[in-house]
Length: 417
Image (cartoon, rainbow, N blue to C red):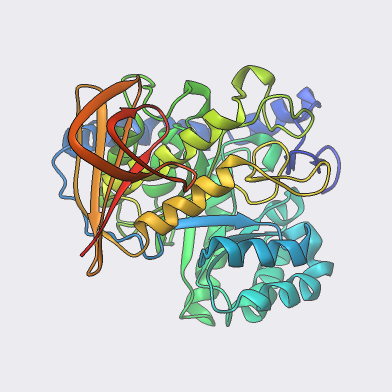
């Protein structure tokens, strides 16, 4: 990255732009696009709001649903071992366009995961946004090199934050259009995802999905964070996580620019007392136990919606928000065992039912050999049984009891068929 942009290696994101005059000038230059964002939202949003609760669910299994984001150059040997221990086969890998000189090194590392289902997240810098010929040349190189090993390419990320380089949706559309044209001309088998709007800011998503540019998304990627609202069940403007997903699904259904596929390619909660590694202020941070609870429940709720094709936990090793704290060696947080337990309990299953009654959430799924029921509650609830019941807690420990206490940590009843 070149000034005024700079990368924060602690939180794995760009620093905030401090040059206010530069930001103001760039936004003034893109005023026409900002007007289009407003007008498209006013036109499309009412239709999406009207149909979102009436659209049928899709049939989505957990086979490739629970994904993990990894950094190939951060503790590479340990990362491979941890991925094997988790037994996760759905991965997301970042590639920085400003590090084209490291392509061969990153490709060599990625080849070790050739049996996995991988999304390559191509992250932009201002140079590639401004110079579309440079973008075309480098994307062609990336597609040629990574194509044999990667399932999908996420083109750009976090397009609604100026520190990431984009100052309007039109800039992003011109950026994505280069990738789309390359696909049409040379790389016909590629799967291209976009537009990667972060947070519940769907006015940017609407503009990216409803426009006159010649392009098409093979799936819609979203960085659907809800961390600023606390628990994933909390609401924002009346929308909890599932209703936010319903609205996003309605937009993909209406859009002539996208297939009806949704990938949540990044989500997490920042962890307390990890500054400067936490990506937000301490005010939004949660303790490690809440982090594990929230993330598992987020994944379960997204699966219950049956409108999301995959959710990627961001990420494996990161002191401020990961399953592994790497500040002093590699320490597995409880979230590591929670993710592993969720995969074991719900791997390769289809949803049977999901309900929310009296504050209790119940998700049932099954496959040919196993039935799993996941339970949790926002407050503590007690259920008395006539006979002892065997269940698995959030972190994989097995228990037997006649008086079951259900709380914020999901538990699993696993029955062999």
